[in-house]
Image (cartoon, rainbow, N blue to C red):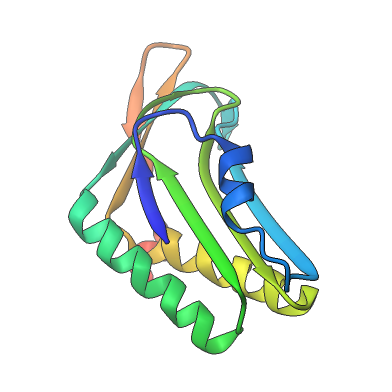
Length: 141
């Protein structure tokens, strides 16, 4: 399941959704807003998301992960809108019978989400300047 939210990510609620009695391993990735990027002090971030396509493609990513690294449950949520330092911007969780599949699927999901989904990040700096972050990796895919 993939979702987009303009509300604070409820990490515990998402963890509860991937619980499965057959799971022996759970892997979670949380991407947080940091206060520095490329030598500049960041005040906050802003994400713009083309939600219909992001959800469609996000669901495809999770389905592809399931084919490659069989797991029992997975969930991913990406924020949109303004986020402050320390906010969770993206959450990925995978539960599986064994840890190896959970690690691999979680890594696959976050990497593919970052490179394939129509999500744009704008950094707002403490000096008042702002700018859209250029994703070199996204452009090369």
